[in-house]
Image (cartoon, rainbow, N blue to C red; front, side, top):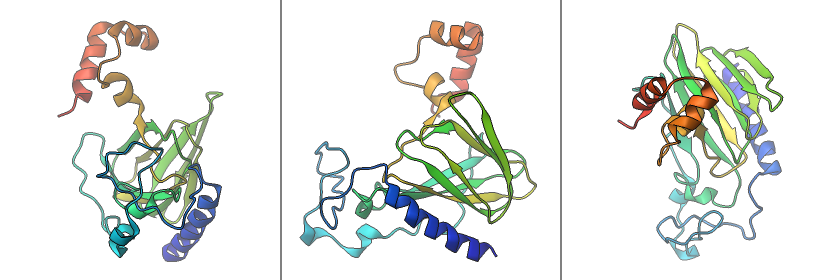
Length: 217
């Protein structure tokens, strides 16, 4: 059943990519030359003579990743930075693995893409918040699919007793991710304390405590 569901998911991603968030390509391929140093909306193209099959290949989503952090989840991207052949094609994937008993992909946004997930294993509680401040949430099980609209804050949490994992599809070669907590409390330079204390109605000590927990290790 899960294999059949995943086949449907792949078909959905193919349809999904038709409504790309990224600009349309102007040539058959434009394999990203990430070493060129040229700044464009995307990446400069490799010379055709330098393009190989490996520019269109990635095997990094086949197995669960090791989760070794305080939130209990890890994201493995399959975007243009891993697959240079995705440059200008407006689509990418990722795999997310969650520890049992609360593994969380914390509230975050993707500023350049809508996200669609397919549950490979386990059970998840997921949700997103609209600009009207309404929470849209659902409990998912293996084989289920859920969509997070572009730019909206969303999350996933494994409240089951077994590990969980999903495959995510995006209509962008590089959707970008902004974690709400890390963005606000871990930016460089730092957001001024007086902004955070007023926004969250907490004291400076609490702000500094959160910042210390979110500081890069």
